[in-house]
Length: 273
Image (tube, rainbow, N blue to C red; front, side, top):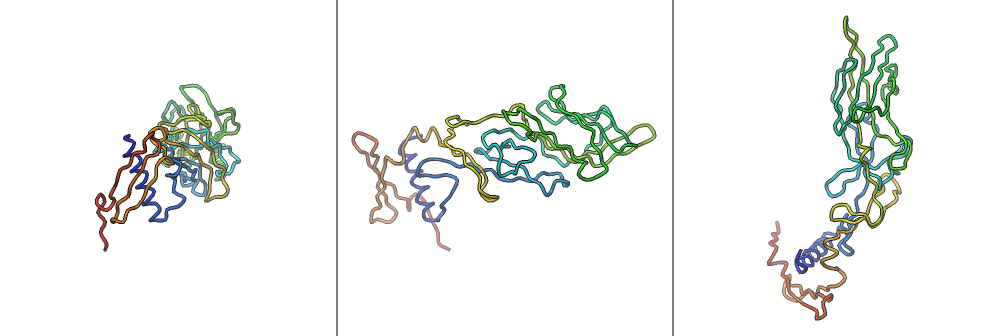
C-alpha cells in the first residue's frame, strides 16, 4: 500500500471514529492492532438449546478454541484453535452398518441397535480408523447425548471434539432404525496452536486476553504486518486548517519531513436530513 494512502486511510478512520465516539472498537488505529474476541455460539440441535460453545472470528475465518467438558466457555484455550466441521440439527435415519459422512474424513457409524435395551452402539472414525465409541441409551434426555472428549489434543486433556444426540429408535419386522437429530464436530486432528509472534495471514499475534465475565470473554490481539511495515502511525502529524475540512499531514519518518494536504469535505459528500 502507498505510504501516503495508508496514512490518509488511518487518519480518516481516526477522525470518523472520534466523531462517532466509537471507543473500544476492535481495530485500534493508534497502534494498528485488531482484537478478536471469543463469543458464545448456539448449537443448532434443539436438545442443546440451553448450551453454547466458544467461537472466535479471525478476520472472516471462524475457529473454535479448544475447551474441556467441564470448562466454562469463558475459559477456553483461546490460542489453540480448530475449524468447525459440522453443527447440524438435520435428522439422519440409519440402520446398523450405515454411517454419516461428517466431512474432513470423519464419519459416525451405527454399529448395533438393541431395541430391548433401548440403546444404540455408535462409533466415530477418522480416515476409516477408530476414534471413539459408546453405547448410547435413550431412557433419559441426559443419556441421549453422547459427548466425545479426547486427551492429548494440542497438549490438552478432556477436550470436547464431538456431540451427538440420539432422538429415538424404531423396530420393524426386518430392520431396526435409529434417528440422530443433532451432530456437532470440530476438526481436532488439524487444530493449531498460535503462539506470540506467530502469523495468521497478514497478521501477527501480539497478545492473548483473559476473560473476565460473560460479556468479556477471552481474545487474541493481532497486528497487521503489511501496514506496520509501510507506515508508523506515530511518525506523522495531522494539523487542521481554517478552511473547512482541510488537514495538513506531515510524515516525520523521512530525513526531510514530507507534507501533503487532504480535504475530507471535498472527498466525502455528507448530507443533512
